[in-house]
Length: 262
Picture 1: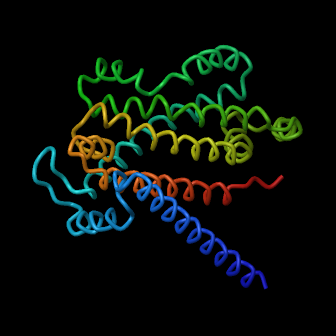
Picture 2: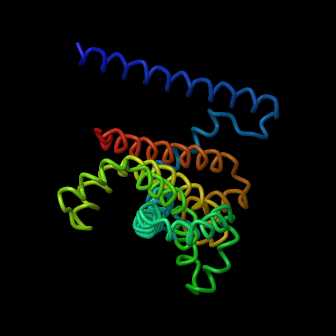
């Protein structure tokens, strides 16, 4: 019975996705007609996309690479920056959530730096790392860590007092308390933070690569604009959106698997 319900749910999810895709194509077609072709139609864009897929990993020089290489380099930068941000955010969030002094000390800094635009960090990244690659990873790291830090701190601070009493009664060491109680209880909140952070990281990469140039999906968008290829820009927008959706679905799946049983 449960298997049938699961299959029906998946079928409806697929149908809704297809309906959304058709709605998008319809709106896109109408806009193309209203702009008299200034915005390329879905059919014209599809033809260019087929050409791009014929050899997505070609490499003809620094400014002429296939969409596959562009996307791979962006994904690589995102995961490096996201991983570095997570390595900072999770321990610091656990410290802030478990220690009132640390919360009072670090929370004002979090609230000051969290709203700062990624583009404002870029010059500092260039100054610190002396190259665009390092600066791009730096802005991903610094802008993606806040959601994970805040959610981790909230998850740790919301551990019920009875859980703490149990750890005291059984004489848990600090390490055992962290492993057996703090991390399992806060894990769903941590995953929520990571899910939000990866979305921020993926948005930031486009702006970062537009500034840094070289290679990547952001640079591809800027280079396509300079070449007046609106079809390629639209393709890049769809690719960015689809990859972002897949990343969100991946962390959503992990979140469902890490629900803490009270």
